[in-house]
Image 1 (cartoon, rainbow, N blue to C red):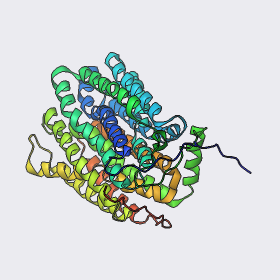
Image 2: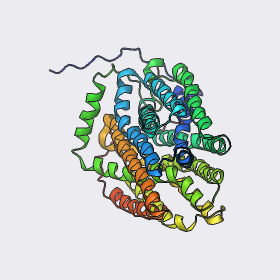
Image 3: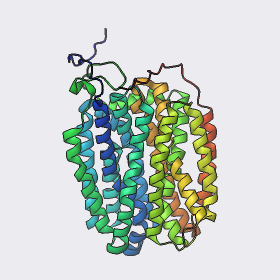
Image 4: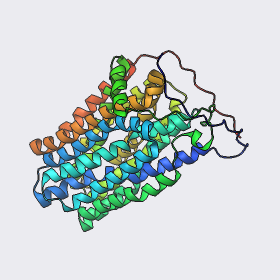
Length: 436
């Protein structure tokens, strides 16, 4: 008979007094702040293309290649990070990841060759950010919450947008008035500043503090899972034998292509091509961050109540339509139609995440965080491909128009793919806890 590692034998807790806020909400708050602090690095690549092109005379394609390496490693690291969290704990993995992000961003200040940009920003920041990816949010949600998972997923996903809102206008101002190096140092300091919060306040499992997950029954903390890399690969091969995995991976690749790869990386230089100041274009991206928070939290609420695959189809269809109109809206100044696009796109930016995580949980159960890590890898590979191709298209055609149109068509394909994801045998969802 196969033996399994013994789990913790902690004594089940006494019932929580009525009226007290569950510790899970404080853990979620720490995770929210952590993701905000790490979000500064994601705000910078689109602001670096023109300054680096001007200072070093590197082609936009070369700079975009470094960004694409960052995005690809961000995704490819995520499933291994989820498994490492099972082995070493959330707190250790996230703290180390933040320090790697900080070091990689700071090292770019002294670079003199394009390969150094690929190494520091592409490899180091990519690896660190991959460990801070949405698999972190999925792991925290799965461990600490049994009820309200959709809502919490939406809130933690929105944290990245909140970080973008906080950092992007500041970084754009620094780049515009003081150059790109102070902006890189700011990103480094922001990532470092969050490490003490993670180490002192984050906890790996409810059993560490003698609690049951929010809305669920007490379970002992499982023993550390050895072989993190082997488990991540094993889960991948197991999931890859199922149709829903490829549909989720395909739709999420298009999600990454149309958000991080395209808009986050190329919107500012594309708007600048039409005569718009960099600070104004960066301000519009920050507005996307505002409405991203609203849209993602609302999507989490919808995911708790409506069929996830239908939500995905609607989100991708609306996103595709909006991208087809964008080339006609860019101008030297900000006009009302462009503001409407920004608000609309912001509401849809990562609204796809809560239903995607819900579908992973529905089909893959206890392996869902690692499966989502691989699905997220496809998201970032899609982003990486379009980030690179967008730079090449700009060098080749002198504009980004063909990229906007192609991304709109891809989103229409993603809507169709979402609708053919089959339903899993019903997994009963726990009832929402009664108000204290």
